[in-house]
Length: 78
Image 1 (spheres, rainbow, N blue to C red):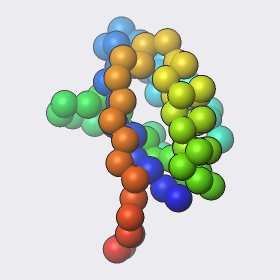
Image 2 (spheres, one colour):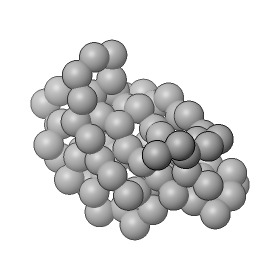
Image 3 (spheres, helix red, strand yellow):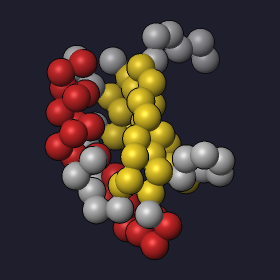
Image 4 (tube, one colour):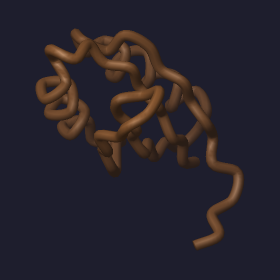
């Protein structure tokens, strides 16, 4: 399964957070973005339970990550 996680980051730690996110094996893409969120990542997981572990133990554990919002990809068109 694939999920998109939008992340609010402490501005002083933006580069450090992106660097650490890039090191997580299950994260396929890391995008710095404009708008309500600072970073969006694409996560590949085998199940909802695995995704939950990645989110709680890897993403939210990074110092500087303030908040996340997740969207599970239901269908990929292109």
